[in-house]
Length: 90
Image 1 (cartoon, rainbow, N blue to C red):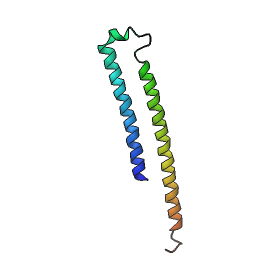
Image 2: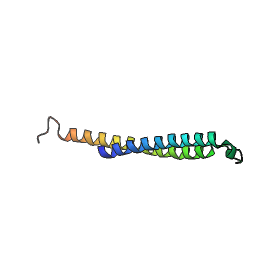
Image 3: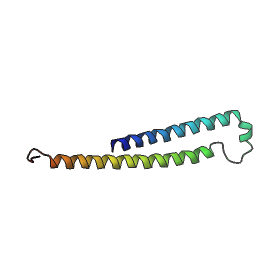
Image 4: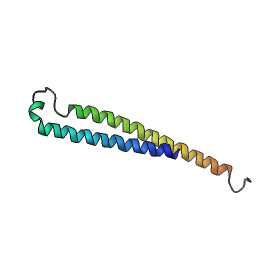
């Protein structure tokens, strides 16, 4: 289960990095292609808001999975400690 926890941590970092990359790309496009952005009826950051919301939802789901996994591991450890306590013989 520790490998799964590490994998979830990697996915959380991946989603944060994805949003950072999308943000940098959107700012770059707005800066260098502002004349094209003026033609559109929507603001330049509209796609960034949608992509950011998707990344935020994914991060929330992954953090919830990480918390649930942590609780599951904690319960399993407590159960193992109780079954092999000092008053029990192996």
